[in-house]
Length: 431
Image 1 (tube, rainbow, N blue to C red):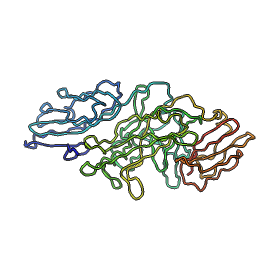
Image 2: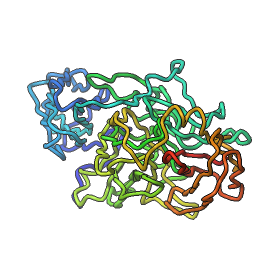
Image 3: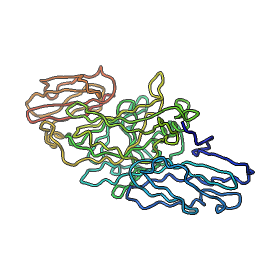
Image 4: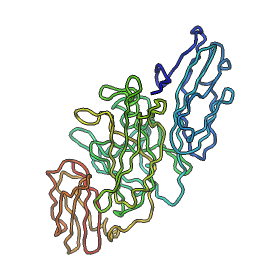
């Protein structure tokens, strides 16, 4: 595998070559920014004199782009003392910039992330309709079991005994430099996704103790165009540097073929289809300069899932131990683009009837649920786990009758109720 860099300082990879004295070395005075923009955005320009200096002044330095690992994403040029970034197509590319003076060279790495501009008639769950004080988060400590944004229910499980949570939270934490579990609610971008029509600082945070689940507030199936994703600060810095529990991705010589990916299933009528996968970090390239950790908002296309009534998320990593995955099981998401037209899956109950006279309660609960209703009818009820296995069936359940799931593990389950007027789906949570 090709090796370009010899040592690491902070978040910058450095090479120093030549025989001049140390007082001739180029110096980084402030880190290069991570560049991020839509494919239609104007060029980004940065004055390199604000980030480097030589023994005398910034003008003593010569600059060169020595590597652009995916030139289809962005064109990066040097114009005197300026670095110019032309955003081309969605993706993320590694940029290696060399500063030279008197035979000495310093190479630093930064990133360019490009996002697509999504057009069409969509309902967008962008978390900006949720209330948060500055630099805070919601993690389900109110035991509500979910929160709603833009017509999507994001399910949450909170353990009041251990003050712990899993599933979905939301946040506006901007600290993207503090490593470790104490900073579990932060996105590595330091803010939510910003685009021409949806701009804000809030975003969703997913933690996998059980699979994070989202469903639709109207109980019907919808097409989902996609959403934007990035790493949490906790996971990104753990992969970049290693910590007490997780390895540094690539290993000491950058050659380990590590990866970290999210897997997304769409469920319809209680059964999953083929999943969509997205790599949040990938170190499997033969050329090590192409290795990356996602640190910009990137688009995940979910159109291949078709029409679904819920989405279920999982994570996989090359860093595994005796107790499972060592990589912190977190990622961040923003701007879910959902088709507004509800799709018939069977003949769904009308929204008003579902909300008024057919409710599953208490949800979340300890495992004993009831379906409320005022109709004189029996229901065909089936419940599936997140792997699609049928774990409960009662073809003659009367509204108000107890559904006893107390022996099942804590987590998310999909309930389907079929009656005289159609089918209703509901995600239920067991503490």
